[in-house]
Image 1 (cartoon, helix red, strand yellow):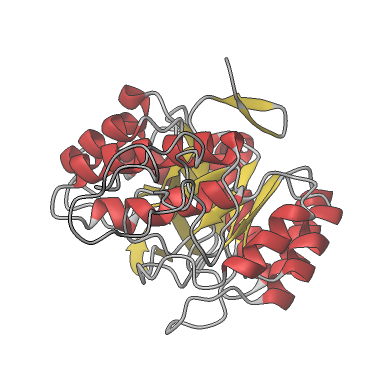
Image 2 (cartoon, each protein chain N blue to C red):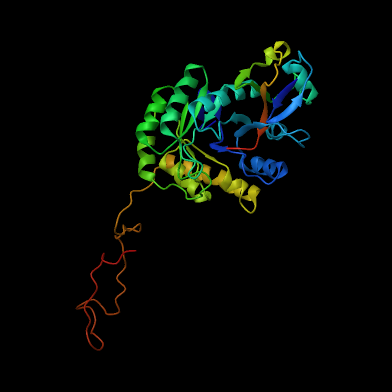
Length: 282
Length: 68
């Protein structure tokens, strides 16, 4: 494997983590997951409904995805910790996408509750992947207290606004001691590519695929965008500059003026000034 | 006696265990993907057969759903 992603000792080939929320049906979800090439997929824990047809666990088994339970819908550290423990019982995994939100309108993380929950879960042996604000200091705290990955948002969940503060994200990435996964806000493929070009280790997204008009096609676009962005990051982009820098060498530019050189032939009509060689580039 | 299962009242026999109730709901104890909270506390799978329900207990029976 050329360039694997390693989280808490687990190796992944794909750098796209998919959420499963928002899909119109389990069939559409399965097609999208397969097209995305993802190896890890989030699920939520909710009340069972008698007589429910099909199971998302069967879908994940068929697609071959590792399951990452989340604590979506939790507003307090207490609820998030309880939900994580229930998820550990239900799915036999100590991996958890920790999500503690502050309010329904923005779904932004509650930094204080998030930090408390992360500490409790790490101490209890969980492998915590923390959904966090794009706050470099909070991200550093989460990594220092033992989270296996920090997952800053690009913009609010489901907003599709992409990365609204690339500068904060750059700082988070620059100081990171654990993998950084962009989580939330991706609207289309270019957003995922930008995240990877900035140096994120992976991208987690759901709505951008599940709510697209053709989820499977968008899933394929996301897979390619994440791959392209990663390659571009590793390749190293050129610096931005205000003015042009010619890619064609200035040496060897021909003299295409329409008058003979001085003194070799008699001039025809009005003489014109020759163009200095080496000035025309492009 | 009455217990509350996922927000709905349900009649169960005295001495009914978590395992018995789940089997009645179509979730046999060996099945994957189910977790139970009794009055807000996690009941480990291993304790399902020995955890008896009391009147007015609040039980949450949870499974995987799309999300995140």
